[in-house]
Length: 498
Image (tube, rainbow, N blue to C red; front, top):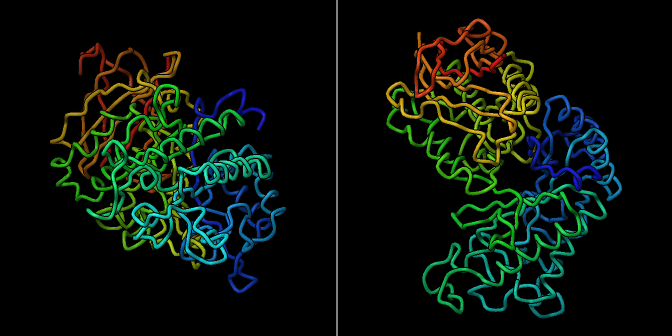
């Protein structure tokens, strides 16, 4: 906690493990019921530390009546849910994470609240927390009510609540849910169901002012705290400071990258050359915000299938595609987020009524995916060039983004001091690319530090025998080049060794 004020987390690697406490692991001895906070703490910290994640993000732990809401319909904003024990137990969980260097981020829901009579609705017989006008005050899709951000009392209630979790429970960040629904008056509303603002626009000006105030107060009171926006539109300057016209968040979920990348990887490789732009477009806007690359709970529910299930081909190709996807995700600039179960290729969708399928780890293919994520976390943390350019424009350079016919891309990443150089190649087809030449800026030996098709990961074993010496053959507007063997559906990462 003391360190984050002196050394802001954004300057460091951030790899988030997103979990739902009620279904991460169940208690076999208690009829597969919930574990309490203290039981969860030891097992969770052990796993997160083993895997090398830097943070955990918990789906809402504030008290809520309905399990099926996943915690997003809160009735008591100031109490951790009693499903998993008492407040002291939750304090213990957070403290144990901190003792092992793991940050704790909570999902926080200031966008809406449920209509349950024992919650905030008609609190004193009147609608004091929500807008009274139904055109602003109700979320038809969710059957919930919208906070009246124009009331100072409501602003104080919500901002005080955010500070409460930081003060009493020492959390390291808040991921603000459904920010788009806060910002837009016409969010999920048909014509006639909303009213424009005083300027005739669709922006909720009171909500914009609230979000700015929230970020200003939180960052002034707790320097180094992370505020993260789940904002799914192109609202500008979400992560710019309020004094320069932004909303003041530290990070924003990159929903565009997530949708485009999952759509690309769902294609049979023979068709990927026709969708090459889905893979490369994100770099056109990557530095417009401070982004998190989220593969969250929302992508593995409601019939969307599991992450491994989205991959095309037979089982062997599905696992190769998943290794390729994970390698691309970690190589791409931006902070990282993976939902539980994705890091060992769980076959089924997330089911909040049962534990994730830990038994898959008895099978070698799933253990090897787990090892891939562990190793990528290690590389991401240990190699400065892997993370120092996450949020800056000078740490990334394309080598070749235009080889759509072969469905191959390559780029390089620099450390901040330009002393470390990493080269990344991605072969998005099951075809071996022999003698594939890529341009590099420096002459010397390039050590192969990661190969997704290594035998250890369940791959075919093809690669570059540990590294390649560059040749004085110009390529891609660079003075030297590497003659690579690109394995099928493979990621290769090279580090220049002077």
